[in-house]
Image 1: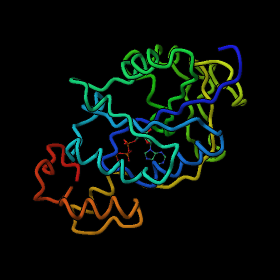
Image 2: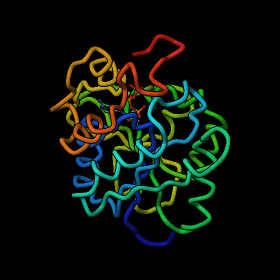
Image 3: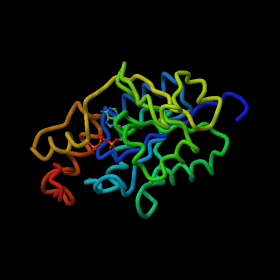
Image 4: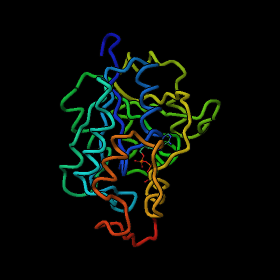
Length: 223
Ligand code: ATP
């Protein structure tokens, strides 16, 4: 890439369900860094965790409801259509074929970033994309190891090369997790105000995450 070019953000997750802890940081990153778009990429079968509790069609419907008001938010369903585990490196390889000269950046929460060295073929990820870490303001990322050497304080670097840099952006921290939302619903409580109202209504209407919903019985006791 010879000249500065807008960055496409890629935000993967199980989104089971999507909530404001995902949406607000993604919007802040998109606005503050003037990203070309943020592609939301719901996982199919996650390699690092148990299978999602809501069926794929419901996770997709909830995600679409959540992002519908933001033009630069789009939903990319390639992982849900792929058989087998959803490895990020495979997703990036397929995106790279479609956008060979574009700057791509994986958007990760700090917890996900800290676990990156455990991901399948993780070094290849930085040969395919940058990483934008949504961090707690003032938090410190690893100062040693391979990832430390990739870090930059200058976002323009991500517009000038297509991949390979780690940039940290401070975002509003919302202590919300999908696990806690599912637990509330299992207890018969409402998750309202933790996630967009249309998503909350969708969960109610379809009886998702309730003890009697198919798939809600969790072998690992996660409720
Ligand atoms: P679960 O509780 O089921 O593990 P989750 O709420 O952590 O789910 P995921 O879909 O697993 O959501 O997360 C997708 C991405 O969103 C990850 O990069 C994760 O770090 C980030 N993320 C999740 N919750 C937050 C939050 N409250 N603030 C910032 N980033 C978050």
